[in-house]
Length: 243
Image 1: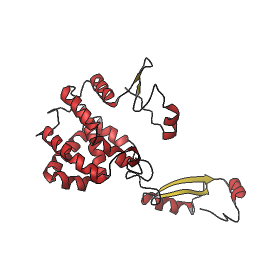
Image 2: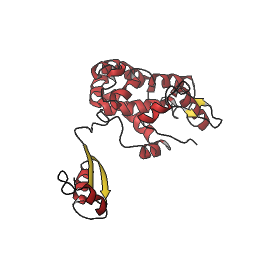
Image 3: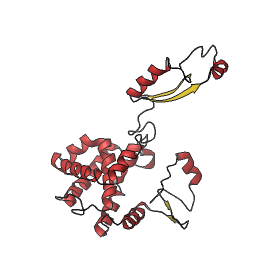
Image 4: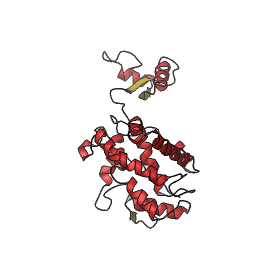
């Protein structure tokens, strides 16, 4: 059992300290803080007792948490692709990650998992890598490592996604990722419409606008106001609604 606290960048700025210099971290029942993603992964797998936990999985987890595999995270999630943090451009990253992916295909072998018939805990991190990498540059990666190798990674990805517990997590996790303007969330200037304001409780002109936005996947906040609020808001600049 583990509660999950998802926070904003602003909240992280207030929380970050010498005691908690980075995330993720676990606040344990006795109040102590557990840091380092690889340690947390191994700790949770040991507690769960289902994932294979051994030195090979420890190595796999380290590969997943290190460049170039982990660099898909900033490339996908940050507006500048992580350039301000020293992350190489996509083309350079593709060159660096290609031999690592080929090596992983060799480690996977005939599978079905890297640990054999049962999955190991390091494979959760590899799945995460592939999830971001496929979304970031799957066609380019397929060209780089070859269709046969990509098919093996895709088969592993599908098998891991179908595991009990994993499939439920994937169904429940957020659907929108990344900082606005990133590869993951290219909404600014494209699909971020801003805020629509209309009357609360009226089945009128506000409906078709919201349906069109929803169908097109357009990000739009909706502010429904009372007639009294509209009386205060109405002006030469805003003579009618919706706007």
